[in-house]
Length: 566
Ligand code: FES
Ligand code: MG
Image (tube, rainbow, N blue to C red):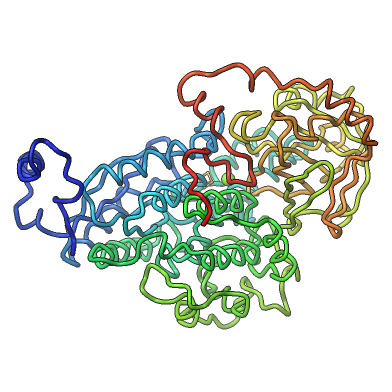
C-alpha cells in the first residue's frame, strides 16, 4: 500500500502531530485532502538555464504529472543538482557524485512512494541511477532524449563528433574562422542530448537494457511528441510502482548489468558508460568484472551504425527500431528473463520491438560494423588494474604499435606544449598524458582525446596512439588508451614513464607495456613523489572528493557510498 504523506514521518513529537504539521504546510500549496491521500510520485526537476541538454524538462514534467494524475497519483516535482558537460568546471565528472548524493538524499528525505528521474546529459543519468540504487524506492528513469541533427552546406552533422572533426580541420587550417563561427549554430540545433553515440546516448540506451526505463523510450528525439507520451507513460507507470512495484535493486541485478554490458558493446558505446555502469553496480553491491567486459568485447558485434564508430545519428537509430530492436540481434547473449520497470521481461520487450523494412542503421551479425565489440580491456606493466580502448573508433593500422613516449605531466602541460612547433614529436610516437585521473586532475576530465600536435596535423596526421589515466568523450575518435589504473597521481606505473621510453600497444593481445627494465622502474619508483594537488588538503567538496574518490575500475564513486559486494 502506498504510504503517501505518511512516509518517513520526522518526529515533531508524536507521529500524528508530525503528519498534522506536514499537511498544514503542504496545504499552503492548495492541495486537497483527496490529493494528499494518494500515492505520491516525486519527479526530479533538473531544468537549468545552464543545461540545454535538459531544455525540455519543464514540458516533460508536465507530461509526467499528467500521467501520474491519470493513474490516480499525486505528482510532486522537486529540484536537484543539474550538470551540463560544457558548464561544469573543473569537469562534470567532479560533480557526478555530488548530484548522486543530492538526489539520493532528497528522495530519502521527502515523502514519496516512487520517483521519476528526469536526466539526460552525460553525468545526470548515472548520478540518478546511483541515487535510485542507494535510496531503493521504486524509480523509473526518463531521459530528455537526443537532439535532432544539424545541417551545414548539404552535410548532416551533430554534437559533438562533428564539433571535434571540424575543430580539427580548423586547427589544421582547412576550415576558416567564418566557417567555424557559422557552424557553431548548426551543431546543436535543438534542446536535448548529443545525438551521436556519445555518453548521453550510451547511458540512455543502456538504461533501457538495464530495465530502468520504459522499453523504446531511450532514443526518442527530445523534441518529438512521442517523448512527451513516453513521459506521460512513465508517470502512469510510476503510480503502479508506488503501489508496491519493484524497487531499483530488484531490477538492477547482476544479470541486468550483464545485459547492459552487452548493449554497451553492441552500441559501440562510450567508454564512460563502463565507468558509470561500474558506479551504479557498486551501489547495488555488484562488482563489474573487467575481464567479463573484455570477453563480451570479443563476442558482441558492433551493430549500431552511429557516429563516432559509424555514420548516423540517434534519430536514425530510433526510427530503425532503437535499442530493443538492436538487442534482438544478440538475444542469445542476454538474460531474457530479466525484469524491466515496465513489468515486461527484457525478452518480451525485445520481441515487441518494431521491424523496419529496409533500414540499415541496425545491423545483423552478418553485416555488423565490426565483428567484435566497441571496447577492449588492456593490461600490462603500465596498467596493472586495467585500461580501456574503444577499438571500434580506433585506426586499424595502430592497433599493434610500438613507439617512443612523449610525456605530458598534466593537462596544463599538454595545453602549453602540444602546439609548439619546437616539440620533438613524430607521428609514430606515443603521446602520454598523466595526472589526469580521478584524484590527479581532479575528476578524471575528458582530456584523453589529446589533440594531434599542430605541426603534425598540418601535415595531415589524423591519428596517433595516445595513452592516459583520463577519460574521453564518447563522441571522440582515435587510437586512444584511457582509464589507465592505478592513475599516475597515486603512484601508478604511468607516473614512471619518461620521454624517450618505448611503449608497446598490442590490442589483439590486450597488452599495454612500458619497455623499460624492472630495475630502472624500481629506481624511478623510489624517486617518485606525489603531485602537490594530491598532497595539499582541499576544503569543502573538493576535499571530500580528494579523500574519497575511487579509481576508474571502481567507477570513481566515493568510497563511503559503495555497497559491500554480496
Ligand atoms: Fe549534454 Fe552532450 S553535452 S549530452
Ligand atoms: Mg560527452
